[in-house]
Image (cartoon, rainbow, N blue to C red; front, side, top):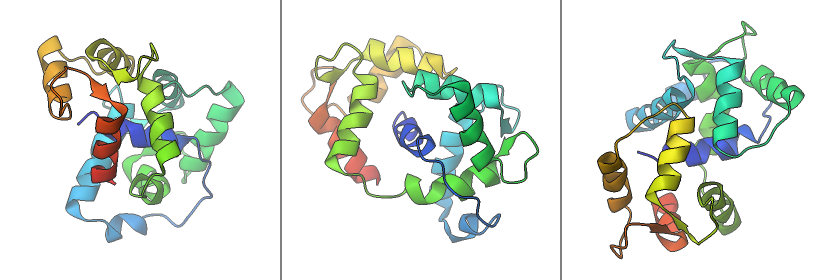
Length: 173
């Protein structure tokens, strides 16, 4: 579940050209649409059904993506295909689907890992995961966080290593 936003951080770094509306969503499987909906919902913190510019900026900041107001507005404008000041799910899919389901290079995986490893000790620990999810407006109990980590933690140390993270990313992409 927590993997969804790793992709999103990478995706919003790209300012993609506007494309015809609703083409890509018809080519996706139901599982891919469900996965994109989960990513969208992470950004739609007020559950309005659309992502606002402040929500985009909050999510990017939580993910450690540093952009100024101008860059955030440019990203927002590139995604807001119908230019109504809101990013609806269909627009989100049109812009992010290709990047979301691409294979990631080792350097991209390492960069995503570093966004979570705040203390730079080579592991994503429960408090780091909880902090970033909280910044995204998602609040989980310590037990829920522990279960998320346990799904990935092969060696049972209660943390996610770069190898475990890479394995998860490669399996998901």
